[in-house]
Length: 473
Image 1: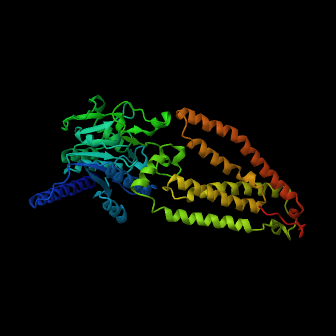
Image 2: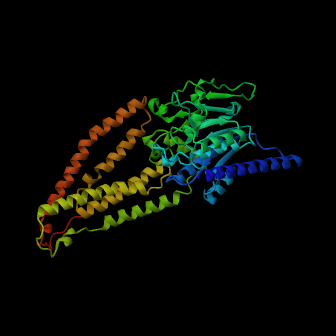
Image 3: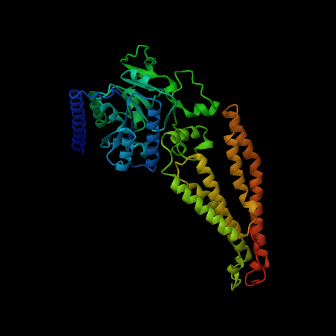
């Protein structure tokens, strides 16, 4: 195993060296024919496959790279992509003006650690940034960064610069580096010998590799535009944790320019999901960047199809004359009425739950919130009508939750809160006062089912041909 691992690292080094020599040769050729030389700086991100959210991160990477172009970044935009990234995604990035560097996935030697999280298995690919030796400086980025302004002054920083979001551990969602093949080879060697890594991911490895960064001076870009040497701490304004905004509902980071927002939250609370707003106020800001830079052409067809389907379901329910008495004809009294009532209550409860949950998972996950929420509400309304017609329930009782969700969205989206604490208290107060209403609607639904059983049309073995259920409308 040791020999195989060593051979693997040698192959990786040989590939990287060949890439560097090819890039140098291309540069010399351009200079010989008088073409302008390549840029000396780059914003870089990585992309790999193997997680349930590959597509979402692909979209996030495109939005981030396009936003950098929109802010006038005077640097190349590079994506370090593993070889298994779909060719159509690679081509889309190239069409956006992004340079794609295809690489083999680095073997993660920390997979056996007890605290290892499999979703970080391939994050060590970020180390390939040190192999981009055609650049003087590289700003390495995670895809969940949202730029608020141009940050080209970062290219004046030293050999390694990062932000301390945590008081003691720097964050690897954005850092500046000086590419070096010597450093890259040494990092591969440290991986091979199993250097200490607290979390088994890029964060822990780099924190172990640069253990004294906390003691380094703060970066302040020189006014004359010169580049610094050595390592530096970056001001917090270059990696503003979104939670800072949620507390004040405004940016007030005194340390450095308020330039970049990061979202180091749970995977399902990233800003590109349609449910991120108004749950998270900054979700709409991210989607506005996407709308301006990329659009939603890939999600719109599915959203329109679902909307038409739900409208069709509503139309069918409007015209239907439900009659459940047919279900009870020609049956003998083999089971008690109480058992039938219990079964009916369980089935009705699960049906209502399905009516509110199924549409949530059908909405395209990366669609704009102002389209995603109406589509979800339309879907849950249409499926709720099926439950109402099938079980002959009171419409208002079933739709109480639906109206409650709309109210919650308005409460969370209100733009006039003083700060995040007031907003949280308002949401809590709304939920407190709505809870009894929702409970009363549930009790009414259960009572309606009991009445349903007791009606002549539902007495087992006693079909009533003259009984006809009324319409919903």
